Length: 116
Length: 220
Image 1 (cartoon, each protein chain N blue to C red):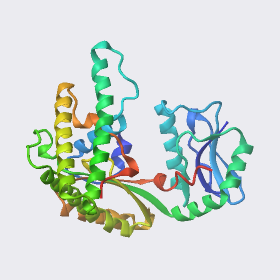
Image 2: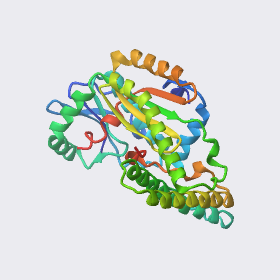
Image 3: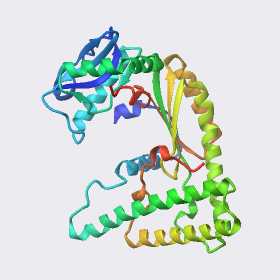
Image 4: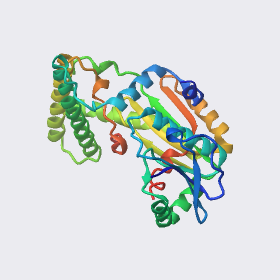
């Protein structure tokens, strides 16, 4: 830990929150599903929801990019918006149901990066 | 097997530190290139935290003692000295270019975390799909603008930079290749940016060996 502290050239704000975010990235997808019967359902849910969340984010980014480039008409934007809203709502419900938080579903998208 | 820690100039001194499993560390040369290696009985596993730390420690030590270092990723190994030499020979041009690029430089990392969005846990309000999309587009543009505001002035001070944004809350993850002599100025610039955006969480780390700027090149 001492060595890591030495490496901090500058830092401000909520550093523990940053550390949690990075830790979640490391462990985003469980390497193994916990085979404990009590926990196996949550482990599977985490795996499946992580992938669904990844797809949702990728699709939303793609849609926003096309919207930004003026490639979608009003009706298409409305339909896509409704779809993403419902998807986000459903994800929130599922996360609550399985006791998962946003950071349990983080995946490093790497060079795919952000939308714009 | 011959395990590779880093590529250096042929005249670089081998670090005195021990390598993975306590093995001695040596520099094998091919023309003007040097490979920092240990002879190991078997391929180290990335599950072994000790081996990963040993690798990092050797790379740090090499990096302190030489002007140009291309760290290899953990786990790169060759059957014997001959196959290492063949790999160096095949990749020589690329490795020389990469060594020149990182010469005299260290890597500095920057991560910027956005304030937690209050709306995330509240149910999405029923509105029009168009409003939702417009809202998301505005947010994305704003995040891009903030990331630019921090990244561009720092990239201008660096010899090279790599930028990515891996999660929704991480506004910016970037690595900068900074000449050692400019490190203090770079740090001052980070602190100025930090003061201009007290709402953001910002962590700047380093100096590191230039891992992000060598990974491809050190794969001969």
